[in-house]
Image (cartoon, rainbow, N blue to C red; front, side):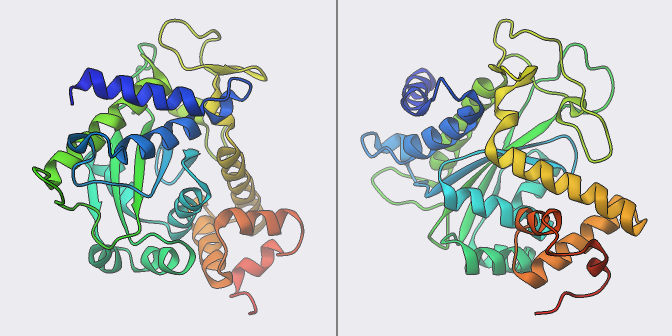
Length: 298
């Protein structure tokens, strides 16, 4: 299948899932379309070696401030939250290297044992493929690095890349997935990508890019002119509450961000919670911030 035909098939799938009244769900439509296109049995060359069970899309300004903006289904969204809670994983490596990361069950257990444990106990996924989103730098951005992103593909099987079917090869399947990741980048940002200042970070203000969409710009949210609509996705809003709790912990415990985040992650792991769930419990008063100094009671 040609690149043009692949793009047509992908955008048709996006149109099926798009909700015009809810542009904040645009990245969810992209993730679901990615899953469907990679699982399309009508074209063997398109899906050669890489049928996928779940997809999530995440962006970041700098580690560890990752923002989940879309997922194909609740299980994929949960897998992303557990990866963020673990503090490491294929996404972090892909961000660092700018290269795809193929992780079977053995590598996941060896390289990221905490994540392996969390995924094994809380999700149906046993392996992953992480693809970097290559985002363009804004013409107005003179310093620092542009925002980065990844697409995480999740699999029930223990080895994500297979060679089943006539003429199928692992490299062919990965190449098709990378082509879809490139289409996701284009659909999300068009000709411009958000800067780290737009994404914001704990303790820092958020600066919006110039108002208006312009050619190739992603839809903006009516309540936040100039901000990409998908930054207001449900998963992104829940992650922003984690950032708020991190700021609270830093001030209450008088500790740097890195130490406060480590305490939050240790507490979340001990309580068998995602960081989002723990943040909710802290905001609601069920978990005192001072309790982060010592392991929580079972």
